[in-house]
Length: 57
Image (tube, rainbow, N blue to C red; front, side):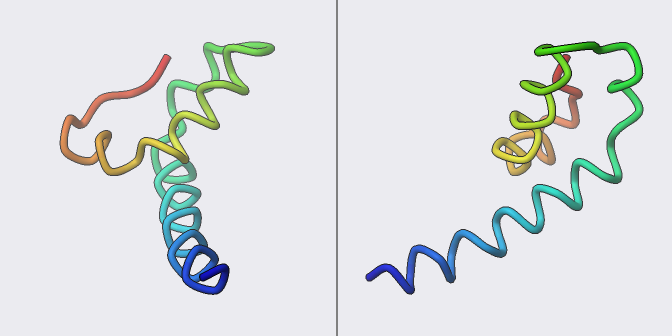
């Protein structure tokens, strides 16, 4: 069961990081915890962000 969680989580996290790297233009305006939470949010919510085509701020 643990293997399935890891096998499903690694690609999800990898795609999230790729999304973050390719959509980072708004991060220059953010500082401190706002920037940290935006980074985490983009990695977690990348499927929604693809559909909605919005930036987390």
